Length: 435
Ligand SMILES: Cc1cc2nc3c(=O)[nH]c(=O)nc-3n(C[C@H](O)[C@H](O)[C@H](O)COP(=O)(O)O)c2cc1C
Image (cartoon, rainbow, N blue to C red; front, top):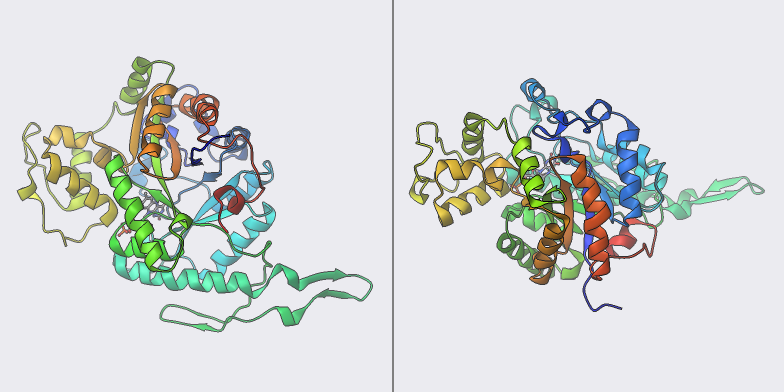
């Protein structure tokens, strides 16, 4: 028995360990990233470790220059990929990503319920409002973050109504009477709103009660309000404990204000882990992975993140808070931009230092470079100060990070009573405790 609150653990199958120069390693298996086998092997190991879910972020655009030095955002469709993985697994949750800015809600409702049926209740939806890709969907520019969240709120409302329109109880399968189902139990939704007109019903029946756990990531005020209304879990970009604690307590408060139980919203910081048997080896992998990091590209990234041009600023000079553009400057992601601004306001780092920080070098995620014990100690330290309700693991640098995480980090968390020893249910809602 333990009195410790157990954490939730998801594993990103993006695959993060091939990013930057990770794919160049002999053991990267990069030739097979568009095959089922590449992921099934990892999915089976993650299920053996009793993880809550596999997580597949997604984008809907391609910049040709991205493929010059790494696979970039080249990827399979996430829902089709997870449907293939569903066939080879039985318990682990499968969280796919679908954009509310670009997709029609009927299609998303149907794809998710299909994944839910095929996996017997293991599907989850990572709701994104997206940062790029408008040119692929007939939009001359990205709508503002606020407009995207207003659309996302209506979108998710339509999806929920569609999931309720064809309940599982409709189906009778009464061969003798010749009755397949009860048409009276199916209802149209007749939705007419600002963005969508959808009559319904859905033509895919619900699995069980039809509800499936919702994930969200954007942490601007509009993003937090949206998350507090609908999300069960947050994929959080939190480079340090303090950011994570602030986000967690703010989201819990917002959820309570909306009449929800604060415990129904779980904060899951992304955790980049460069793992090896020794710290020296882990540091070497980290350095090798980023060996070709181009300062000019990183400087362009700062400009994209916060609108600050550092091209003519000496590398050893400090970036001071008075250099920051006005806070209302339009940026791609307010969440990521605000984290960079916060770093500059607090530390006024040199350009050289700024370019190597997670807020610029990565996606603002928490990073551990070290041994499995280092990762365990960090995870425990964050859990103890309530800087989250678990993690989404982003193993980095090499496949070794995936293996050490599943073979050593997770078992140690289990021994400490911080993570489940076995599944107590078979759906993603069961694993997350979503009612
Ligand atoms: C940690 C994190 C992960 C995200 N993952 C995705 C993703 O996989 N696909 C995507 O299209 N957008 C993704 N987004 C973008 C968000 O859905 C959202 O559009 C963006 O953060 C703007 O919202 P904000 O103003 O609240 O920051 C992500 C954002 C964050 C912070």
